[in-house]
Length: 234
Image (cartoon, rainbow, N blue to C red):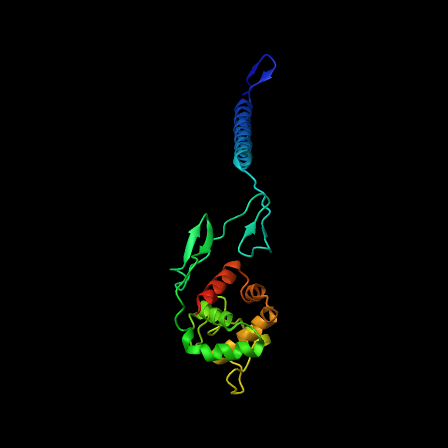
């Protein structure tokens, strides 16, 4: 049966209604999906930008210009002021080192060092052969190892024996002091003769003891300490 009102044909009205409903539903779903994607993109941008802005606002940049002061090997010097460097205190120095205005200083007098009396002939013989003061040689022995005998004791830096020679230095200045055909840094006789050789080469044979001691151990406190011990030897 044909139903008409004026010129409108309502035969396909239900089909049109369903089509419109489906179209509206599909369009709504697409709009929802697009909206969700837009929200996610917006959130991602915010999360990426906000921390960067916050960090930029609070981050401070510091420039340093630290270098080694070659005139004072224990000091690091930046562009505008000296940086204090802490150094360890050995058991040997614990009773003879005092603090003075943030710097390391030694007391003006120490008791005569014990142990060197066991090697007096060795010090004098080696010092005479290389033309250096035997007291300086004895003081180096005392400061380096407490005037120990033959020992394979090594420092954290790799120095060995009674006179604490680095391997490379021993290869250059080692001496067979006891005449057994072997120059051994852990043997007390060889080590003392080797130290005399090194000190002489560093300037002690020409009377420049301080330069020789600084060459032996690149630190002014070491030079002062050895001289102090040498002066205490009667």
